[in-house]
Length: 407
Image 1: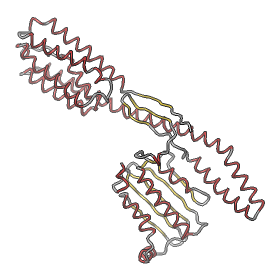
Image 2 (image 1 turned 60 degrees about the vertical axis):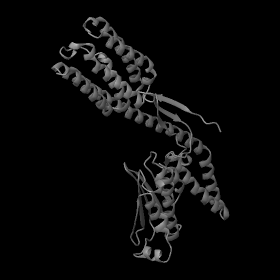
Image 3 (image 1 turned 30 degrees about the horizontal axis):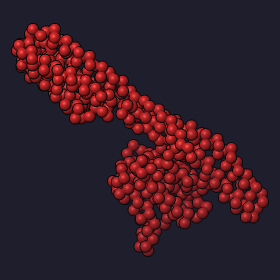
């Protein structure tokens, strides 16, 4: 089967890396020209020349390092900051009057490029870290810092932190947009499948149900089964549980959204949509309600939770009867997933569960509570004689049990 893929590449961050590359080149040229114009003031001009030569070679050699976030490693950032700090501290050795007269350091405003690289790579915390070192180096270089020195230091510190914060907001916006495009693609695919299914499979099932009911006998039973499958299929289509088109990912040059057909429940380490595992339970006597968006869990955790739900429905069929109505409700909270299974059966008499465990029948104890305990979750059973039974299953988003180890 041919698998089609549509790639949408987005990057709010990438223009910042291109701007940083241009900034480093321009400020490198500026620092060299500044030294050349004011060369008479340097008592040890060779110190300035040697440092600027190293700075120029380093700037050109590391241009690929500031191409994107992936290339800009921590080791490069550390080395780049060291070169900038070294230039600041070498300024008094080249210019004896540097500590007494406000003037530019050897790297001049090229130093800000190192701080900006920290901001774009790691956000405002990284920017604060780097700009603090630059501030200390400037104060040490001046010896007795003036008001202008403190002003410049504070300006670099505030500006770099602000840029780092903007970068973090941009990245969050990219992820949100990628997710929105992903859901939009899934919705379009669901609508297409719904049209195809309605024009073919659902109409055939409805016809079989009508003809079977009219013929009677074994045909009536076949018609009843076709009717149940029609209801289940309509529920499956209406909830949008088609092969999901996940997913957005962070690439070196921005967020990437790939519209492909994948089966997340079988993908090794990929999160699994719990709805896809629970939807097959829906039918004429089982109603399924879900949030309308993917409920993502680690594959093992999703399968264990689905198995617990299946065990709860088995108990409904065995103890409440084949004609009992059941409801499945899925709630996707911020820190946990809650699945509630409720029925309209006769309920469980008080003390019956303890008696069943004593007799060795451990369906609730092992199949439900045991599974939830392994996931770091809980299972609460509420039953009132004559008013049905409700089982509430809760698991945290990051499972603490064996099922969560896959993550």
